[in-house]
Image (cartoon, rainbow, N blue to C red; front, top):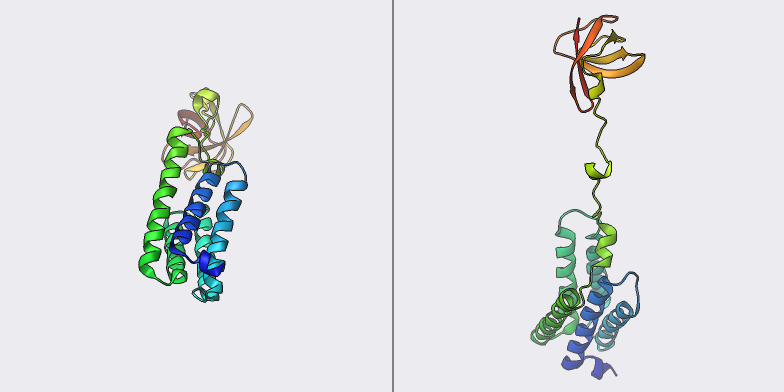
Amino acid sequence: MVEFLTDPIVVTVLLTIAGVGIVIELFSPKFGVPGFIGVMALLLFFYGHFQAGMAGYGTLLLFAAGILLIFLEFFLPGAISGTLGTAILILSLFIAGGNALQMGVSILISLFFTILAFFIMIKVFDKKLILFNKMVLFDSARKEDGYVSNINRTDLLGKEGVALTILRPAGTVIINSERIDAVSEGGFIDQNAKVKVIKVEGARIVVREI
């Protein structure tokens, strides 16, 4: 069985099954059969090479570290974690394979079919990446739908009130019995001074002393 699992052709098939299974799983709403088959193919690959003495515990830890870094890529900014994880993952396959040339050919063939499966899922079956859709917010809060970043108090333009606090230049004024955060036109406005709203810029209320 070990001799069978370490055969170059079988290794290529196992890696191809693993890659295609993981790609299909990316388009699934939850972990299912394709992902399970892909993981089992990888386990069989490492099991055969471990039993043959080609892969040790260090190789297995390296493989696990690569998978962990790729998983962290979904939550960390940039592409450093994913790139490093992929490199470590491929390195662990090379170390476990023993023969670097045969392993390189097997990885290239499996990558070809994996990328082909990815494009088939998108172009032929018109599938969406469910996994990434759950992690990325695609909805937008548009003004046409009633969403506003702040309240525009244009109704206060030209209204008069009293400075509740000193404005240096920011402070609080009372207009029509309503406490409003405001800024002076540029100068100092004393407490209890009469003020008038001369400009409204979104939530920024600009007042001038009367």
